[in-house]
Image 1: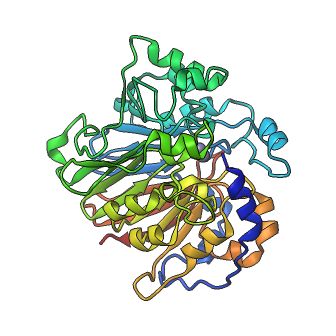
Image 2: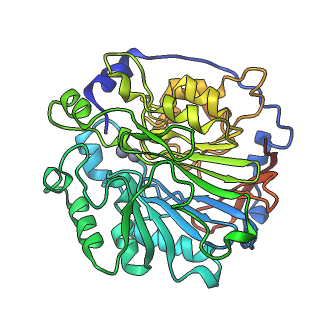
Image 3: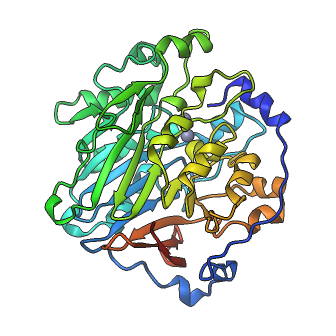
Length: 418
Ligand SMILES: [Zn+2]
Ligand SMILES: [Zn+2]
């Protein structure tokens, strides 16, 4: 999860910055004051032509669910957390609590959510289930979910070999979640493959591709392989040995995460699991995978934060190059996000006048530490965050949903796409 170097760094880095001036007139913080009547409003149902991106707040790791313009569905991560175990191992850090509550498992809550927002015609299967990397907060609920709803195809970073940068089947032999994942993918009814880096066709619309020529998904990264930006060609950014020698025979899942760029007309969206970007501080140069990623991704309208906004990610080059209007932080720990990450995000130069930051689940202790100016620069601190891109791909909206009632807490936008 964190290397020792980074934990030391946490104590060293302490940057404090106040101030953020959003110029987006229709997205002021007053909108967060909702009334009960407002919360009874629901998000209108998905319709053909919309690209809906649901950042689901389970309080238990990451899960993002996409309904593409023709109804093709994709789940990017389905995490779960052992809150008690985590807090014991990493005390005094705190993890968030299950959301809406612990009456169901995270997998059951995810299923409830997915059934709720998916049109009936597309509810039988999740067409694509992607796992960014093999950490429980990204795939711990996948097996439970798979018992309830079939996956058309599972895509991970390393199947079928599962040997980068070490033999995962033996290295993770005592990891219950990984072992149950192996059971899932060895079922002959389940189709599983690795992400083909550089490809713009592996992930595609399955129902009516010709109707939406402006929609595409470019596979940016998996393991140490990164798209070059030219055709489908790729480069190897580091070797297995680079990583295992730095970690003295061990390895780190985070910099191996998948990354995707999803485009619809002028709208671009980036997601990259727990990819890392810190430079210096005794870290090897390859630890910064964000810089080569950012070079080929370019400007986007919306990005999620790599590694939950942890201080070892979201470097300055990444922020400046992606230059997002909207940032989605998927949080579950009291040290998410790192304060210096937050500062990089709120700092706006002349070309970066728009930047609205939304959090799925800010831990109360984070706010206790960082103070009111931290809170004031968020459009929303808690809730499901839904991006809805309009059929022309020129504009999009952000909706915040209450986790329990699925009522609409707030609406932001329209945002113009570049
Ligand atoms: Zn994570
Ligand atoms: Zn991770």
